[in-house]
Image (cartoon, rainbow, N blue to C red; front, side):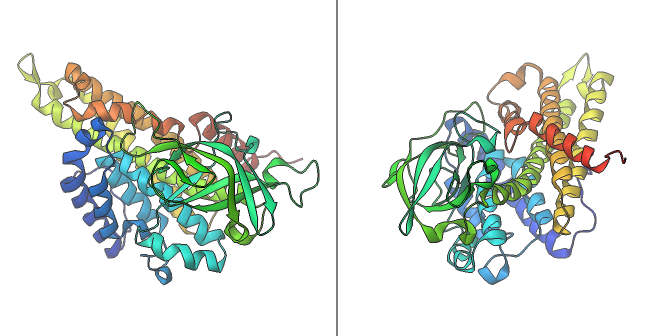
Amino acid sequence: MGRLAHTDGLTDIQREILATVREFVDKEIIPVATELEHRDEYPTRIVEGLKELGLFGLMIPEEYGGLGESLLTYALCVEEIARGWMSVSGIINTHFIVAYMLKQHGTQEQREYFLPRMATGDVRGAFSMSEPGLGSDVSAITSKGVRDGDDYVLNGQKMWLTNGGSSTLVAVLCRTDEGHPEGTAPHKSMTTFLIEKEPGFGQVKPGLTIPGKIDKMGYKGVDTTELIMDGLRVPADRVLGGATGRGFYQMMDGVEVGRVNVAARGCGVAQRAFELGVSYAQQRHTFGKPIAQHQAIQFKLAEMGTKVEAAHAMMVNAARKKDSGQRNDLEAGMAKYLASEYCKEVVEDAFRIHGGYGFSKEYEIERLYREAPMLLIGEGTAEIQKMIIGRRLLEEYRIQG
């Protein structure tokens, strides 16, 4: 293990967890990732291994059978996993966001019912905000839930659902107008519903269809899907937190944590790209010496290493701020923005160091080159991050008087 991206101040338990995850990544993920990715194959064996390690319950409290670890521990594990294959970190992240939302906002009955089985990975989570026509404009969602006796009836179409096929629990954001007078702000008339379903594709329960995997340029293996609700009945006790109108805040709390996770993914992919680039530069010879001895390549390596280190430091800071109970939307937005941008740049530099071989599917950097762009748009685009950051900075630095 090299000098970059070390984290000071970790406990013995944190170091032990990270060492176990890194060993798993090196032995079980990196050797098979590119082959599975090219086949767009779901990594069943890897996921079973992560279940055995207890990673699906990493941040779920011990009283519900989890490990009760911090966001920092979780983010550092994600960084390691993304270093092996970013798609695997996506499988865990969406599950974790739903578990986090249940822990923070669920009723006691909801927590007791779902969290112990989520901790073991027997229940696997996904969450759904986006729709085909709105992208990052969450307040414009049109999916709707209407009360009908003891149930709500849900109708609408959702998009970009990670774990859509493999999940058995989906947290879905819908508009619910009951109890909200005309003219209520859109974000105050949204509700999160907890939908239980069978894994698979097609009609997975009456009124709920998962059409199939979306074919993507990268981020393969993990199933990304649409979700179509047509008269789907959900019991009223499956409203997250037991009351309507709170869904927007619940989802944003989850996404705030998710942005730290995306920053961690960017750090992990950038680390792997640096490792590949610095290794190849010492093996490839031109003009009678390794290309690493050419100043042009050394400049690239210097920039890449600096970016890996900077992104890691910002990601760790954002996680620690959330763990301390402070608001971290500014730090999470900055970390997500910087880590995803730097990841793209580090991957491209590693790609250039590989020369023509970077274009070959035999080399791992080809896969990373297709994966990195997802981080620029996942959990809110880079442009949305900059809007959030700008608004928060203006709040912090408002001119008085």
